Image (cartoon, rainbow, N blue to C red; front, side, top):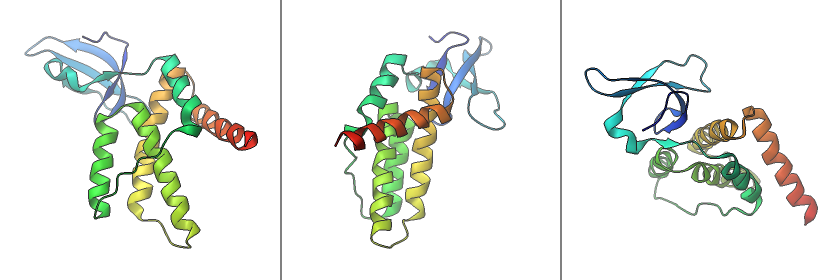
Length: 166
């Protein structure tokens, strides 16, 4: 059971802070999503808490950033963009932070490859990239106790180090 003040990852809302625990008429968590312009407190049944997961530890977050340059991309391809979008949305909702970071890397590469062929990338690619990026940056920022912009700069510095070492 999660405690008041803890940060958890909700499948649909992303990173939330546990604001309270209500006992009547059934046990529910009161959660406040972070990183949204106008967050609204939501309730979530304690009976379904297996769908929630704790936010990464500081060390796990550092490890993800360290391994980003060598992280493999996702090779999933479907017959249509709609099927790909559904697959990756489910992975973002139910996967780990590392899965979201891998999806970000995958779609940055796919978008760059499409543009290199002088074509416009599908809107779906941009949408998936935005969702995965937002989800992973929020969780990493909570784990590392920094802003999402600072986390973004950490990723960029890792990529710069990797390029300069090759």
